[in-house]
Length: 171
Length: 177
Image (cartoon, rainbow over all chains, first blue to last red; front, top):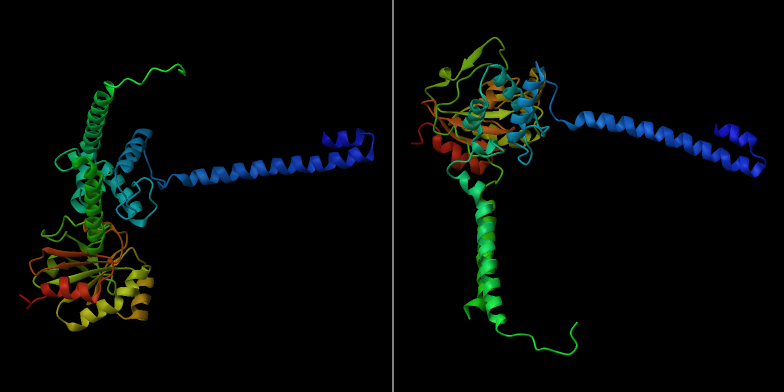
C-alpha cells in the first residue's frame, strides 16, 4: 500500500520520503515478531518446574502449591518451585514421587524436615519457636504504635496549655 | 537526662547486636543447615560400587568400623580443591575413607579418579541422587563421619580442610577414644 502511495505521489521528493517510511514500517513489523517470539520463548522458561507427567490439573496445582511452600536448600532465597539448582530438581522429583505414593502434604513436609530440618519449609509451621516469626512483627508494630501514642499524648498535653498568641495576621 | 541519653543507649544496643551478628557469621557459615540426622543411625542404603557395578554395598556391611563418607562428583570443582586433603586423610590410615559418587557418569568419575588419584577404599554410586536426599545432601562436596555402631556423628558441608579433618574427623577415628 505504501508502494502505491509512493507511485501516486507527485514529486520525486515525496517518493524519497515514502520509501524510507516503508522500510521503517517493515522493520517495525519484523521487530514485533522477533520480540514476540523471544518473549514466548522466555515465558516458557520462566517456570523452573521441569515437565512432570501430571495426570490432571488438580495434581499439578497441588504440586505447584507444595513446591512454592518449600525452600530450595541450596539457593536458600528461592522456593523449590523457582530454583534451578540440581538439588531443587531432585527434590521436586522426590515430592512428585511422594505425591504419587499417596502421601499427604503434611507427610511430604515431614519427610523433608526429617532430612533438612524445618528450614526447608518456606512457610514455617506456627508452633514453638516459629511463633516468634509469625507474631513478632505484629508485636513490634503494636509496641511501636503504643510508644508513638504515648509520646504524642505527652507532647499534646505539654503544648496544650499554651495557646499560640492571637495575631492580626492570621493566615 | 535519661531521655537525652535514650538514643545513645538504643544505638549502643543496636551496635552490640551488629557486633554479635558479625562475630557469629565469622565463626560459622550462615547458609549451613544443621543436620537433623546427627546422632541417629545412618540412613539405610544399598548402592553399587563404581569399580564393580555388579557389587552392592549396604549400610549394614559397613558396621564395625568408623568411616568417612565423602560426597564427590567429577563435575564438582570444590571436590578437586579438597581432593588432596581427602587423599592425605586416607593416607594416614586412621579411618576408612569411602567415596560417594553423586549424580555423576561412571565414565567421567573413573576418568576423574584416574586423573587426580583415587583416595577412596571404594566409591558408592548414587547416580540419581535419591540416596543423597536421605542423607540431607544439598550439594557436593559434603562429608559424613559414621561411627562403628553405624551412627551418623558428623556432617561437613563444603570442602574439608586440614583443620576440619583434625578437629572433626580424626577424633572419631578408631583408637582415638
